Image 1 (cartoon, rainbow, N blue to C red):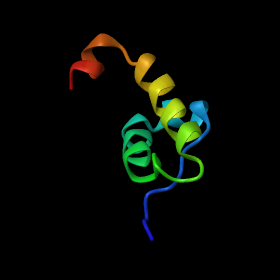
Image 2 (cartoon, rainbow, N blue to C red; image 1 turned 30 degrees about the vertical axis):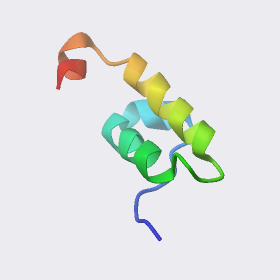
Image 3 (cartoon, rainbow, N blue to C red; image 1 turned 180 degrees about the horizontal axis):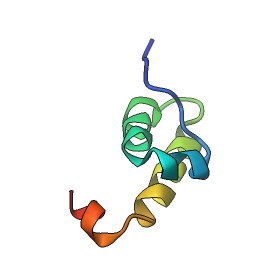
Length: 54
């Protein structure tokens, strides 16, 4: 069991981008994997350039 939540909502993922990426790593192969990865990708796509470089 993992303590990283499954973040499937892009709005939640955008608010917690780093956690959304961890969620995608932890749950990407699980039953909700596609939704988790898609939410993380949406959040990453909305980052400004300075934050994305980090």
